[in-house]
Image (cartoon, rainbow, N blue to C red; front, side, top):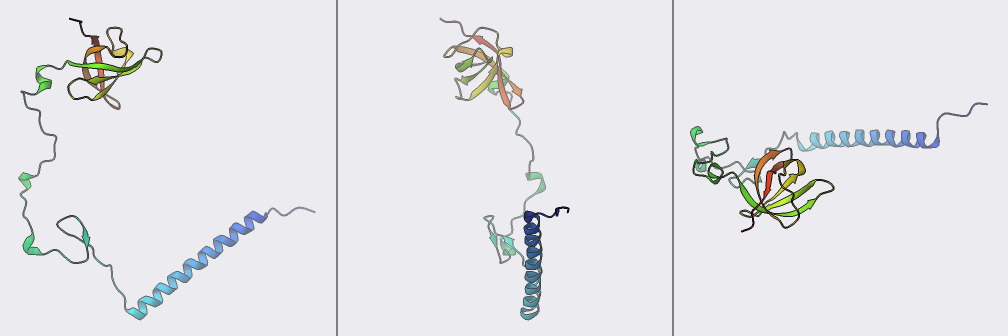
Amino acid sequence: MAKSQQTYNKTEKEKKRLKKREDKRKKMEARKAEAEINGKKGIEFAYVDFNGNLTDTPPDPSLKVEIDVEDISISVPKIEEGGREAIDPVRKGTVSFFDTSKGFGFIIDAEDQEKYFTHVSGIIDQITENDKVSFELEKGMKGLNAVRVKLQKKE
């Protein structure tokens, strides 16, 4: 005699699925009955006030502010010619971490205290932690990377 392919777990899942379907049908019927009793309401509107908060009252048209299309700018501001990058792209900093076995590290910029990733392929001189270095920045996959890293000459 063959054993049934239907397990206890399958029957329980089927019962739950049918119960869920029945509950959903009952809720839908209850909503329909409530709509018939209270009168059918359409979609209620939500408005945004001047502070960006959602409200149920429409905004006052007398407080409306007109904005010229020419005043809207969707771009990155241009760097002025007198900026630091135009004068000297070489930056100075300190090596905060460098792992020679893995071939990467981090350099802290002396000017803005930003941390930049550096790889052994972008290093010219041999560096270790706490060395003073000069470097240039280049866009990498995950942000700016320090490249052309050289030790600063000790004075």
